[in-house]
Image (tube, rainbow, N blue to C red; front, side, top):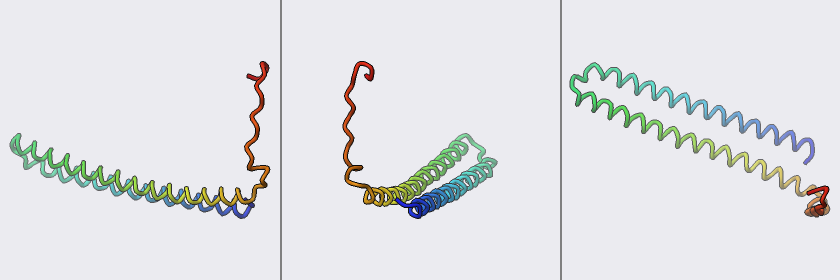
Length: 121
């Protein structure tokens, strides 16, 4: 791989990392905002829970909504990570294929293993 190819690969990998970071930050921000909204809503409803049964129902609803938000967050985060991995893998495969094409036949041969001696176990 020549210098231009190396620079291009580095730029593309850096851009992919920046996009990943931005996507994860945006996802985390949306998730935390959603959690805060759920907590505020539950807190507002808490004053109207006058019986233990109403309190338990409020807790059940809050827990269910929080679970759904968390599950969605993990799914979306997984998709973001998978997409980034796919892009990075493709970039690395292209770089490897380019470098492989530039190698001489001698360089692609597996080197012989050195014989073991008592001094070199």
